[in-house]
Image (cartoon, rainbow, N blue to C red; front, side, top):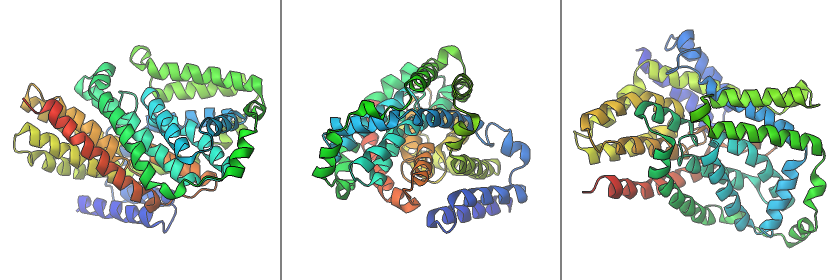
Length: 427
């Protein structure tokens, strides 16, 4: 009965989020409260359990990076980058989008996709404002590019970290097996955007002429603070990349960087916290609790096991079922708790199939990471983008994102399917 009630509450909250009857944060927190009320999950499982609780690593990673980005915003560096990008693209809307897609995907592979969208989104909003372009299509494209690019490396997307830990995979394993596919997918996605967002590519010669006459260096308001902020950001990025050596969690690195920046500069605590997207953080907390309840009551496990059993002992079929099932489920629930719940099942499957079964892990990673593009709440980067957009007066609704996300997900996973089959499943 509790499992049925848990599913009902999750569906009700999801419908409220999708229909936007109430704010998504209120829907998520309300759903989380109901899960606790019916004892689908208790306080320990909701707040402290690694498998079913709030992923505090994600929450504090976001908090730390939001503080760093908030301090950077005060230097004028985002205005500088916006003018530079507009001038480099010569004001051409599609050329600008391709540039931002490539930058976002590349940075997401080296950092992680959430950190990347926190850094790129403010620039995007400003450059669109300068060129009189609608910001929503560019922000949506960046969120999807971040999810695609983040699939390429171990640190690019949080689910990959979970997979690497469970499967014993290294940073180089991800580079060798997934990066070639992701390079192709970024090119496919850029071409797809030319069709998906064709109505947004309106060229305004007068606005372009104004931007081309600007001197981007004049946008910098506080050079000492800029260098201090960039120095801290460089250290944080280096620590992200050196995570396998330093063994500091990304959340710890982000908080240390934020604390150092606030302590060492003239920026006050109040000013640094003013830029934090508190509704976004609260939304994630509520979502984690709801999904944790689905895991705790066995709902996610049953769905995953059903998909696995449908493979009937055949590796090729198991890989395809896992790929597409992960794509569908990650579109509905956040891909981080999904992968956490699914990893033990994939480990058992891989053990039963023996040699050559590593393809199952790549199917899980691709399905979960690319499936996150399908809906507005499928991946952390999507939620962050929506929060930043709303803060800047650009409201991107659930369906405004999802109608593009579904197309992108189907196309990219369809391209990934023959890649997995031809590279790993043919003799």
